Amino acid sequence: MSSIADNLQRVRRRIDRAALDSGRDPSAIRLIAVSKSFPQQAVAEAVAAGQRDFGESYVQEAIVKIEALAAQRALLQWHFIGPLQSNKARPVAERFDWVHSVDRLKIAQRLSELRPAQLPPLQVCIQVNIDGQASKHGVAPADAPALARAVAGLPRLRLRGLMSIPAPMQSAAGQREVFGRVAALAAQLRDEGIAVDTLSMGMSDDLEPAVAAGATMVRVGTAIFGRRW
Ligand SMILES: *Cc1c(COP(=O)(O)O)cnc(C)c1O
Image (tube, rainbow, N blue to C red; front, side, top):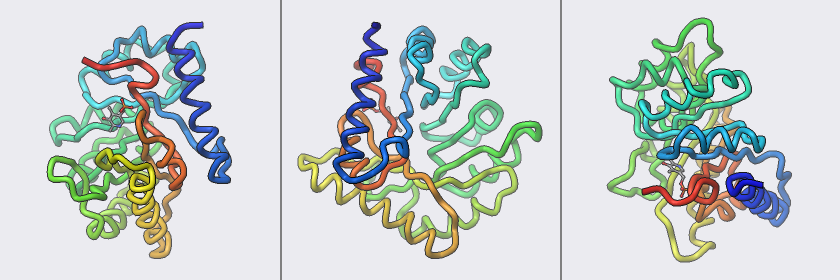
């Protein structure tokens, strides 16, 4: 068994255990393998091991891999998880299935305008800067409901939920509390009549507290593909 296949199995076991520990159904949590900075061969290896969802942060790099794996395109779901620039909206709208990093209305409108008519609506999450990090992208929690409402009204997008990348913390309890605030924000949206079913949160080092707090998608790179450099 290849090490990528091994690592996928290990990560899946971590997710399953974290789910069971908090009384959740493990099958409710989708693993996004973050393949940024790794070559198409690594993605192909993961596909051979049964992985179907891949996360990418850089548009040009992602296109190379999406094209290299074109024969399997129908099997795969490509998730754009990086910072979005307006001038990259077209290739993202044309090639990806999901965008997790919508953080302003202008980019959402561009994606909706540019989503090809023959494709299903682009599934999107709103990225929330839950802990107010100066260096991080994402909308302030207080502004998330208005943005979510506007995005939900765009014809070629389908709002699915929230994404967040909180700063790493020493304590798992603290980390869980921060992820819990993202979950609470999603619950608030539902209370306000905005349908959301997705919480994209948790990475290699903090997937357990994210799952405990209700993550439905975890985005894991290093623990599957190894260290990036
Ligand atoms: C790189 C990246 C990940 C994966 O991080 P790891 O710590 O390698 O698991 C997850 N989400 C986003 C948005 C990323 O950019």
